[in-house]
View 1 (cartoon, rainbow, N blue to C red):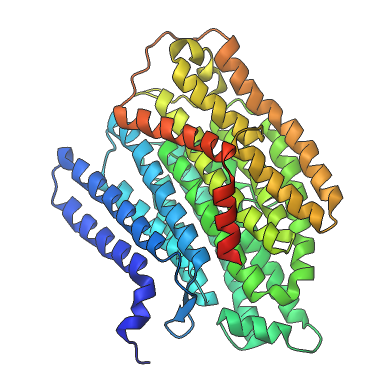
View 2 (cartoon, rainbow, N blue to C red; view 1 turned 90 degrees about the vertical axis):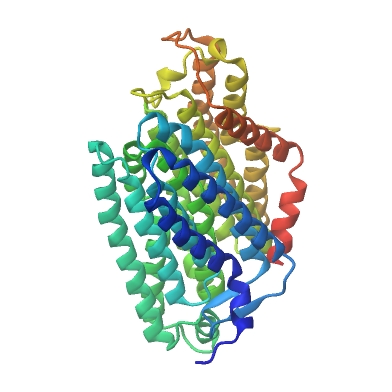
Length: 478
């Protein structure tokens, strides 16, 4: 195989991120414990520079390079930019939390950068093998991040559960990929798609392969009944890690679903749409109902994630460009809402105290009216109340589902969204109508104040003016 320089130009973002992650790793080894701020700054500058590189490729034509293993297209450019910016926000939220607990170490940011690299590879994968490699790079980094606080028994237990269940899901996905390779004779997504679409009866091996692939996808999304890891991992992991896991990887999972289901297995759409229908309904029901019973806000947001995954899957199973663009819009905006929700937990926490109980939000309006208002925006958006972006995300998905004559699915989604609004409104009630349990003043670092404010105001702005991002999602897919 002969490669030219032009083959590597579409990989500029990944090459830059990998090079900087290695440099930051070496630099961090040479730093004293009190100088890890250098690692943080370098990591943030790396993410911003990579986002600019990725954004500059938005107008490029679709290119498949490295002998069909890597694709650079507008969808990849937009999703990579969003992943990098969300990761930037996640790192910004994390700094004060790590400093207060004396675990402000460079390994957190290096592992985060490698996790982001895995997401970028996943987004641009054009081979079943590349998909698996990107997924494993992401997963292995996340396993280590969950166990980052070595003194926490909860974190170690969560990491073990995540590792065991993640390995099982990865094995199922790999088994499905191997069966698909045996049935089609290729790992290239375009060639797999052509083999499946060829005239003739669909083989039983292809259907079996599809089942295993959907199981692997469902686990990465956290869809019911493959959601068992989400509540325990979200609760047990350090809050910055929970924030990171609950946001950017959802965008990567959407890209993975697009590459596997719509591009590689489009010829089996009738089969995978039926599977996704079951996953979506179960996720909407279980996620919204069980979240009501939670008193730990991290577990509540974990079940909330499951319900939102149900909505995202609705857009995918619609099987139309409008459905795919609605699902992309939902994935991007949900990541923005998720980092804000978990970021508020970090904002209220302090050394020796985790603000992860619902009661910890009592009387927040009396302690800080501004941050209570920021949390109000986020809760209303997660509930899907206008004029926040969550409303338009759900509306666009419901429109796509109705347009393909699945009105009953839209009714189910709306019904359980109304039920789900209860646990979001409960947080608002605690903030505005209950007395605070502690009158400890809020001590918030300037960067955390800026991140929280910009995050919530962005959710409100995109709700008032959603057209630009919606049109962009539609354009990159068309």
